[in-house]
Amino acid sequence: DAGVIQSPRHEVTEMGQEVTLRCKPISGHNSLFWYRQTMMRGLELLIYFNNNVPIDDSGMPEDRFSAKMPNASFSTLKIQPSEPRDSAVYFCASTGTLDYEQYFGPGTRLTVT
Amino acid sequence: RKEVEQDPGPFNVPEGATVAFNCTYSNSASQSFFWYRQDCRKEPKLLMSVYSSGNEDGRFTAQLNRASQYISLLIRDSKLSDSATYLCVVNKGTYKYIFGTGTRLKVLA
Image 1 (cartoon, helix red, strand yellow):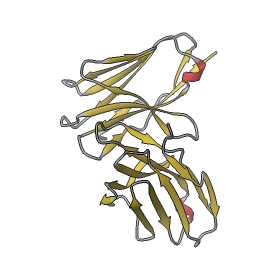
Image 2 (tube, rainbow over the protein chains, first blue to last red; image 1 turned 45 degrees about the vertical axis):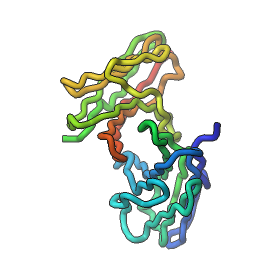
Image 3 (tube, rainbow over the protein chains, first blue to last red; image 1 turned 30 degrees about the vertical axis):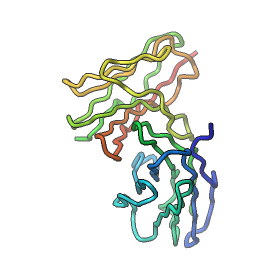
Image 4 (cartoon, helix red, strand yellow; image 1 turned 90 degrees about the horizontal axis):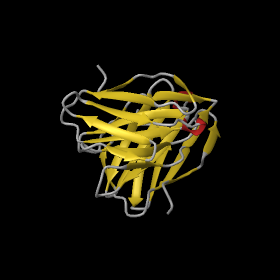
């Protein structure tokens, strides 16, 4: 049974470049979450989708961040332009409709130099 | 006060020991409770959901005390492979999951 899939697993980019992170939730799950994790701030919710619709994007740091979910099996998180302070691990997670058990992808480790 | 509080540790215990972690939460409307395990440079992985009646999975036992607003995780017969950070997670029946900052466990040979 495939879990949440994320790509790329590692991304190193220079300040000012565009970064796109990708996520495929578990098949049949209707809720998708993007989180960011740093040592200083722990896990932060960036945005939540339900049935492909963004419900809460209040955690998105600023206009440089955007997220889309064009269908039930794919979501992207884009940072444009990237800055060194965006360096973190970005996790995607999904949940189903029957319970609140949340499953995480392996994460994308982003380094912006 | 944080919504979910955990002792950051580290808890250093010898192999075979029993260790317990507690986690307190502040919102009495919280409905669902979970323990996750996170290894260094890996994603959080669901260890177990915590039910009102308590639940057990092998060497792991989770308890919920709604009156005192805390959940606990007991690990018996600790293994080296149990070394990780254990995250307490609370959900209020919405999409908002409140994560504790985690308790580090080191099991020593």
